[in-house]
Picture 1 (cartoon, rainbow, N blue to C red):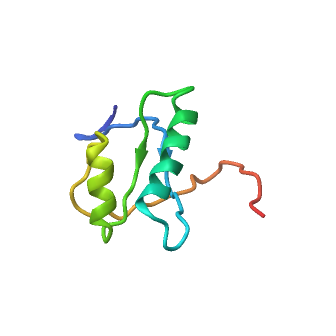
Picture 2: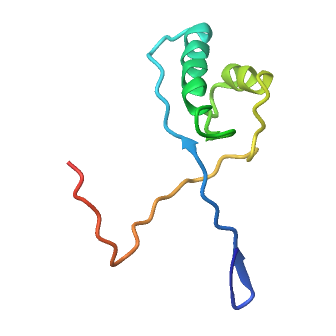
Length: 93
């Protein structure tokens, strides 16, 4: 946790799968097989991960919740990335 002048923020490292792209027209079974293979790989080194589901895909949301995934946010949020000044990063190609 970070605190400054009465404000605070929780800072946590997390494993996140975002974005994940499915082929156009992919069936639920095809998506499920992809996720099953992905989770088998992830299970080698972690016990949980975060991911997003498109807000306009309630069918897929029902599937992942049926597998035991729990929503962290129940409303859309803007997600940002900010590069910190002074940090050297390799150039992206």
